[in-house]
Length: 248
Ligand SMILES: [Zn+2]
Image (cartoon, rainbow, N blue to C red):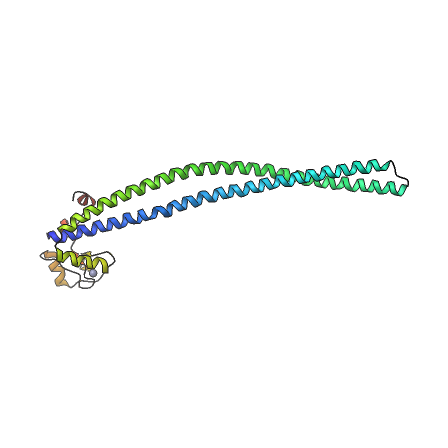
């Protein structure tokens, strides 16, 4: 086993793990914003339903006021009847009273419709109110959970960072330089496994002679195409697990 190659593989594995955690860590603000938006949405729905409800009451009150006005108008018309001189005038007042009564009846119908609407809105508001309450509760819980998860991720990342630094110190300077160059140039992947003679990162065949050399495990070999450091998973000691990383 090549100790330096193993270090490179460890370094790469820690890097992969870090990238995975970073994605989760960076996801937190987005998820927080998402649950905030959900809460705002349901609160907004409640507010607009409440406005509808208040508006219905305003309309209802206006109708009742106008009905009161019309009733007073009838009373005035009736009192005028005593002073009426001609039948024509009398008929005109009767007609006026009749029309006003019709108007009152129509407005009372409208007031009744609005009242029914108010009852329905009241029930909807109660339901929405409960939903808002429940959502606020889950929001607080979700928020706490997300923040604590994020905190844990950060701690884990810090641990990995220290671990990676330790591995880094074990890698010889010239190899480290090549490795850092590859990391920068090759999308953060400097090490590749070779299976059935194919580099598992760039998916190109490596020459048979190189593959034999790789299996011999005498020196560190780079992929002739992507230049990543190669290892053969047939050598069990290079197949690191999470467990191995923890024991580093
Ligand atoms: Zn390759």
